[in-house]
Amino acid sequence: AQSVTQLDSQVPVFEEAPVELRCNYSSSVSVYLFWYVQYPNQGLQLLLKYLSGSTLVESINGFEAEFNKSQTSFHLRKPSVHISDTAEYFCAVISMDSSYKLIFGSGTRLLVRP
Amino acid sequence: DAGVTQSPTHLIKTRGQQVTLRCSPKSGHDTVSWYQQALGQGPQFIFQYYEEEERQRGNFPDRFSGHQFPNYSSELNVNALLLGDSALYLCASSSAGPQQFFGPGTRLTVL
Image (cartoon, one colour):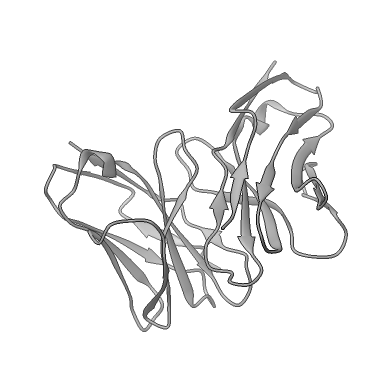
């Protein structure tokens, strides 16, 4: 079985400041990792994913995440946030041996203030 | 290329009623998964359909059932609605591989 822990329920930050949203997972098998973003009253949009290869993955809007197998972490970072980044962010894993269900963390609300 | 679509957008029901939610997958996808997202929580896996069969099921009671049609679209049925069934219901589609694409969701309110 897998589980995902997002340590911060809410992260307030000022515009143009850096931010890190933390994600740790537990699994007895290897997993794929994802970050999804959810804007108010909307569904989930894929932000970035780690499937294989380089442990540092980047999105088109400046976010990046690094897979750390020894620490079982997949933290999300952005060097300079914008007001429009205000949203709920979910970390999720899916096991490599049966890619059926995503296991989500409880989410982190990123609140960007002017 | 249309993404995942869901209908209706919002739904209000009373306790004890039954509800049907619908999902059309992204073009080229043959697998549909359903998730329940309660307010302030992460999505929880309900079940997944592939080749018109339920392939895996999460920890949800039998009141939750589903169906997949030959065109890969899917329905989620919930019987004997409870207040606790109020949530955003998300449909996700996929093909070979682990990445799932989500629809906008159906907001169900049970009064």
